[in-house]
Length: 474
Ligand code: FAD
Ligand code: MLT
Ligand code: ZN
Image (cartoon, rainbow, N blue to C red; front, top):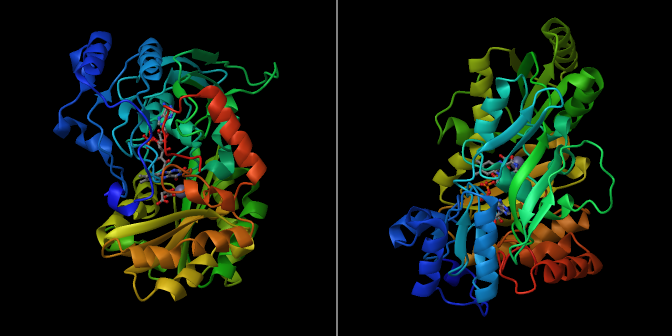
């Protein structure tokens, strides 16, 4: 429980929810959009990896921006703390209350407002599920510019609020580039309209960026406009087995050189991570066992051209011994099966017990160095010390699983893992955010002056600190 694991966190001076508050919310939204039965509230209080637990007795489910605005205006006036929540798939404890904050869920805000199949711009409410948007776009020959293992549950508003990266950032870039505009509600209920659908718009400060990656601490994102690329006609996926991390680096370098514009994903998995998919998730690997694996995906408009390029690249890396074995396919079912080996590691790891999860950016040559370092430090205590991730973007996911949470193991890992990262000038959160679990460690990657400016901005936009307290800021 949070209160056992984080004895140093004190509840802020916020109002305790009473009947009058609840009556007001019911008046505003209608009874079916206000949950206050403890069993109904349960799933909104526990995060996806079951690391953090809150004790909220109230979940609000607005359907429109106006309803969000009215909720926040009231909460601000009455000093009621609010935890914004999308699909609750966040991995740093940002999406669940720490104490009794009211949960504001975007579950019912799931309308697609418009789609322009020439410009590729989709405008939709924040609660649309990523995978549903992608399916909808596929009918128009378009796709979402991001994809991640949580696509079936995460909301686009949550993706934007965390600036989620995922499996194809290498090709399509991050959400700071792909979000053309957004609408958000400030803590005092004021609606901020930055909902441009233009690709180019240099009229003053680029305010949308304040909300992208702000993890619900500066405002609630209600609507987004996103630039979507054309859905590729030709997709090929290779799954490769390699002997060493050096070989992964060589293969990545060659993939960039030889596949160029058609390279759409480059991921790595170590043997212990693949064991999770083949073991706990009972998936089948298409090749035999190796110390390391890579997924290399190409996306283009002409399959003959792409296949030729990919086969030529694979011939080269296999002939010179960089890659030891591999399989390549363009059959949707087989590609799906290969992607599952990568995407389901997160879920499978939970079967080990408790997972200490780190999401680190490191200079590419040092990308894997943290895994052997941690193995030496906690190998004896752990069920597994493993690494996988977005090699194409220099972002590794280090996971240390143990039968159950133990504070002495935590002390062996932290702050060492952050010091290690900081010494190599890496980032202590590459894509998952800071949330509740990492705010004490933000200084390993952010200067004092930057943290001060973050605090000044927070104070200006949310003077009463009602939005997602205890999160992000140290
Ligand atoms: P939530 O978890 O509900 O919320 C996340 C944060 O955003 C919280 O701080 C919350 O308060 C805030 N928030 C949510 N909605 C809003 C809103 N409308 N306005 C303001 N604030 C809001 N992340 C990656 O970057 N790359 C990956 O590859 C990746 N893969 C994942 C795979 C799995 C299996 C899982 C479980 C998670 C993965 N994640 C990944 C974590 C990731 O952050 C999320 O899945 C996703 O971006 C969160 O969206 P959500 O709707 O679930 O947000
Ligand atoms: C991933 O890339 O699989 C996600 O970011 C989730 C994780 O770190 O396990
Ligand atoms: Zn990731």
